[in-house]
Length: 379
Image (cartoon, rainbow, N blue to C red; front, side):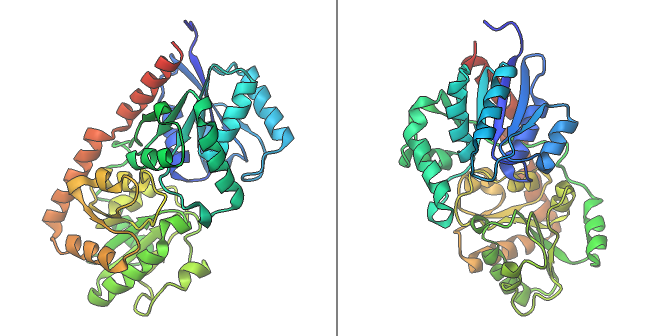
């Protein structure tokens, strides 16, 4: 029986503004400090989320590795961190951190090693060979960990097929701060002013980093289809790498989208952007487990149109529209259906979306699930 707080060492590949990184930040800053002591280890550098973690008073350690490139110095530093901090649990986030957490955690004789799976089918041929090798190796080694936390049912199903140990899996979904993400009547006029748009336009948004799995190409193809039918619709895109000088995205802008697609890059005010939208969207083609930005938009009272990837359909339920991935016509039709509802009916759908998040995915409840899980691991 441990008489002191349980020390949980969270190790993650990097701390940029991704969904896993944001969920890690929310978790370590909300867990009961009387019962748990959290530290965070980044395999690379501090990153913007690391800055937020440090400002919250959570100890942060950086191993200085390159992405997916372990080094003897980094491995040694991680080993010493676990020893010096008397870690009781290593909780890893994402594949490379999973492998590192198992190998070094066992060397450091940490009581429990827990993996974190945050995606579904990654289509590994689309990524570097080392990433594919890491995923396969983790499948072989999965019986050696004490537990595997998955944030989606689809992620659990896919990783069972990849050979991951099913007996070790525990489902804990993403959680959302419904006080921070909420309907905001001032958000829309602020965003319209920033974009130089007048009241009366309709805003369809996609908040996601630039990545092949997010399939911004399909989003832009769908935007071209809807723009040709409705001159009042504008499209808001935000996320790391989603900027006007991104040639891959610029090449997808069809005729008629000039001045109607607004690429904002990485933003700190995601709550404002989400709350300003008429429709939020996910266009992911594969790999998505549980989209944070869809949950955040729903918490803001915004109806969503999502592709049927990961648990997206289960998350939105009957408060949005689910379409097949990779089909811009279906995505555009989903947007049109919601925009044609009219403001009052659209707000009603958004209110049901927010209530669904509050009922099933409230952050405090999800943090409580992690705490109960860790309590059982280290009695």
